[in-house]
Amino acid sequence: MEQTESVPAFDGRTYQHKLDHKRLASQLGRTWKLMGDGRWRTLAQISLIVGCSEAGASARLRDLRKVKFRRVFPNHEVQSRRIKHGLWVYRVIMPEGITVE
Image (cartoon, rainbow, N blue to C red; front, side, top):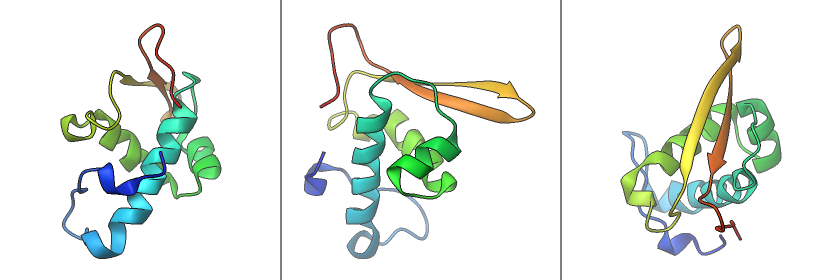
């Protein structure tokens, strides 16, 4: 997902569209592409591969759950599960026959 213009505006008290949109939309696209394979990953693994902080990776996963982003990133479910001592893993499940490009 290279075209950041098609991604809706993000939320948050400190969000400034002109300063933040391109960076966050790019992170969201990289997160989508990575997680579309359905594998379980920790926030640390996602952040390392995507090139953002763990907080940023968590925020992008939350964005993928929001209705307003579903027109750009459709037909998926973000799942999470606790594996030990407060450590969580996440995956994105696509319907059968749908792949992330």
